[in-house]
Length: 419
Length: 126
Image 1 (cartoon, rainbow over the protein chains, first blue to last red):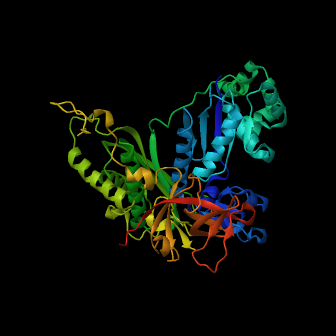
Image 2 (cartoon, one colour):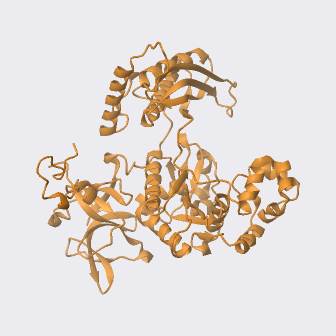
Image 3 (cartoon, helix red, strand yellow):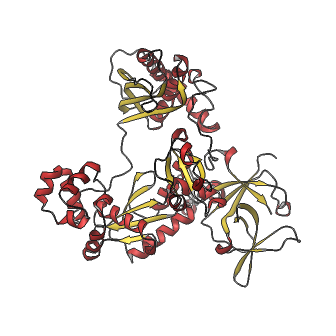
């Protein structure tokens, strides 16, 4: 029998911080978005103190009840490595694992010998022991059911982080008690439509005539319903095969007026995007740049986006040149810029030559970039950089509460006192 | 080059049934890509008796079963400590290198836990 599982890390970013800091064990912990803007991950204790998802840090931290909260800047280098550890523990124990997001992975639990509940309990324990991340696992005959099961496991502590929805009767019981809110693929609009039709629980949605559902919510909604009924429509995928685009966009640490500063930021984003491109052995044939003011602070609104087709490349120097030229064309003086970004698309495998007349020297370019990547791999990312990306980067996002990158930077590993 | 002492061209190698991979020190003790391996910087010279110096990098493994006498990184309240592990009457205890300090029992209820077991040591300032 086909069985899909979904495992996810409880308050994943917070759990990554806790893994290396025993003092956080019982404390409310909150991780903030890029630029220390708002809350994006909260432990149970922080939720209990009333910290909401999306709460602005500069407001939330002043509330008296938030006083015990330990706040962190998002440390994506750490979270990515912890996600990698979680994936590896799973991949060593199961025939197929699909990393769906940084903290959620679909599992192939079909036809495993022995008791499935016991197996999942063991997997959960192994992830906690190896990767130091507490998790919940839900499973059932389809991915959508696995996701519902995972939500049930998370909301009901008495289940010890495990929920089996393979049995239709058990499933029906939870469906009656669970809101359609909890269903993967039911967005805000769909929910409004369903509520308008008097549908609140999963049970009510599943009981609808399939044709009615398709008329109301198109084939997408029809697929969600079929999956909830136990008909699998979504197979397990592998690691995301090839990227369609690579984006490097960020909010600045402060509002930027001068072109020189914005140019530095755009060069930096182009360089980061180029690194990602080379890591996946891809080249980009299309590049776009965007720039905007803050929509929320009362400044005049300006948002501009420009794109060009380029000779396929993954050379940081080419991409920086194109991106800054494009950026200069859309930059207007007088605005205080809040955010900019570089997006690479029309990606293709490196070296797949299409053009008859080229201006680039691909062999020389590949050698230079290989040397750049080798230095940065050996001595740490950012050791060697194109000068145009700036040295001081006073526009960098704020990360005033960043913890060590405990597993990716030797100078930042955890310390322990000899006793 | 993929010659391991077995596929000779002239005389058949008498060793061809006994080919083993060369010792892989990385995976045996150091490989931090293993999901349970973490690096820890040692602070202080209290464990000089075990040849562990200030500034050493301990490679620790959170999935290795603890044994009496091993060096562990343990969380004691708010801090991480490097110390020896002992067993007494079926219970695990952290033992200080100082004879004055009394051992601390490993116990979740008092927030004393084994964080990981040392599997290797790297010293860069030799």
